Image (cartoon, rainbow, N blue to C red):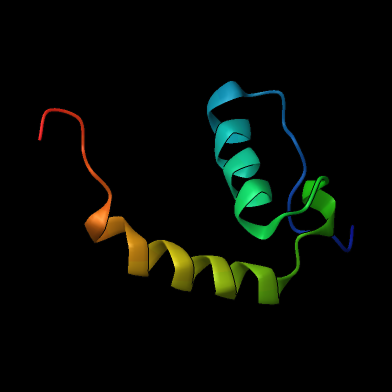
Length: 57
């Protein structure tokens, strides 16, 4: 079993989410994302999501 959590899959919808995590964590390779990075990303997203402007609003 591999040590990394994420890798690009070839599915554009899944890979878009993985790319977003890479952007949030400032990592170029999804294999470099750690569990601590995920915890920080969860905090970032949950704090900012309610304030993001939605389309049509």
